[in-house]
Image (cartoon, rainbow, N blue to C red; front, side):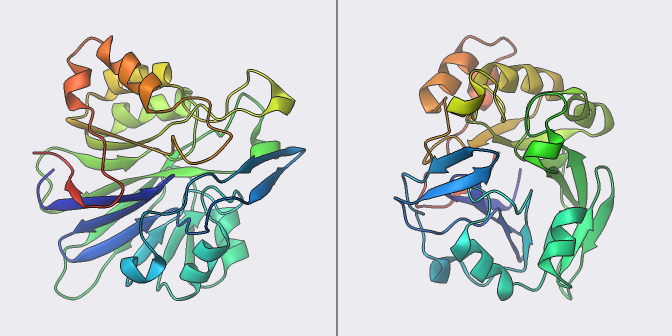
Length: 263
């Protein structure tokens, strides 16, 4: 994808720079070491701090927040960043809790980012299910985001959000052409719930990419927390064994220096 720069700050937190816009996903800037409760007896310890401090990331024009009720997607320092951010796009429930600067979207609803001298960016919320069937009352609502702007040549920039592979996620490549996908992975698990996972496994990621056929695949949300059960090695092994030359499309962003998001 031309004229796009990405910086992976840690976990799901990624800075997207395109055509004068600075968009930040799921801000997490707390230092490592603390354990956070996710409710219903589950929790996780943060093992790795952010690659950049908040001061090195600001200013940002908008935050794309897949959900605000889990600290691995929005921690205390991230909430402080939101206070000075002009716009937050998130779930409808999250927007009600975050206040007037937040726009809440239900899946497949869209909003537009506009500013003088910059191209309009259309943000469409995509479905997520943060766990097994019937888990929403426990895991809460989550959305992903598909971004489209005028200079795109091949398709949308898709941020999957924290989700397992289910019918709603499979519908995205049926409705849209995907150029670049920012995959939230990690196969999140908790001792309390055994083998059940709450984010995509490496095998699910391969299946989704075979459906979507993106030109560029960028994993995030796979390291730095104790509740991730699969890391980079598992993802690389799965993609290396995948057909359709998927391994050649897999790109790992350095956590300190910006990198391009495709050709």
